Amino acid sequence: MAIIYNCRHCGCEIGRLNQRFIDTLQLGWSHLSLEDRKKMIHYQPNGDVFIQSICEDCQETLGHHPEYHELDFFIH
Image 1 (cartoon, rainbow, N blue to C red):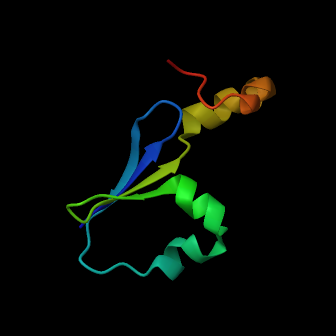
Image 2: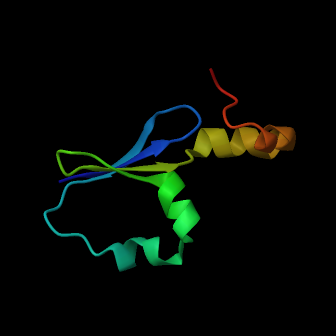
């Protein structure tokens, strides 16, 4: 099982945790609302978990162009 963090804007892999047991409390998942969990956390049939987050480059772009927050995707 792996937990894979991907940027929801550009799709790049931000990071990966390859451990048999992972404490989701330590990862902060308990701080997410149920709605946010449904949007961000995607379970795969092979046991992997994909987390949609944001990479540093896209975060910087959003900082320079705040109007992009209105868009679901700003990188094609």
